[in-house]
Length: 242
Image 1: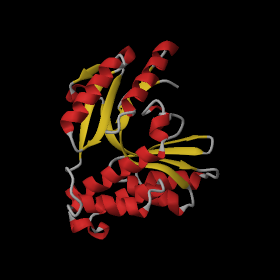
Image 2 (image 1 turned 60 degrees about the vertical axis):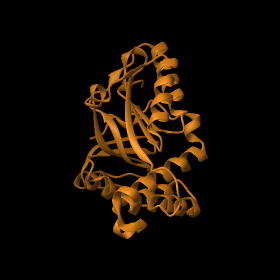
Image 3 (image 1 turned 120 degrees about the vertical axis):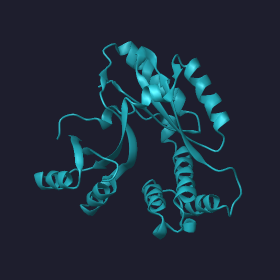
């Protein structure tokens, strides 16, 4: 199950903008708010597994408790504001490579107009979501720092539902179906490994190799421009730039 890294090419690369602490905190707050609104339980993570997962992910990225509590209050309606929701857009980037654009927004019209304009200016083509979404599958994806590794750990991950395991240096990436990623995350943490990222991602069914370095550079810039939008959560592509 090793040797091919799907995760390395899911999103070409993280942008400097996405690495900024403020945007990471904002994204987690939006996810928490959505989990509260959609999962019920009146903001109690013990009664809402989606909320508990969102809180765990936020804490893993060092989101302050005050931010988490404020997001929960927005979700329950205790703090006023427009309801946050998830929306998925699609585009064809430079070279004709497919991209899914995942957004978290309280104003879909604003987000649609901004994303469409950015795609056009960055040299891509806005596309019907269904025409691109079929090329991807929703999977659990986990990335952890694993300086020590053993066959026993890999076998245990397979038993827990891991579909793909790849190691590059001290970094291991694991892909699961939608229902098994939390078990894999908890197992990795139980082994003392630092989980860098975990959650549900759009994974391309088939990666397409980018053979022209110039096209690869344009595609990276294209994705970076889209991810600069505050409403954009993540951009996924079927382009293999490795």
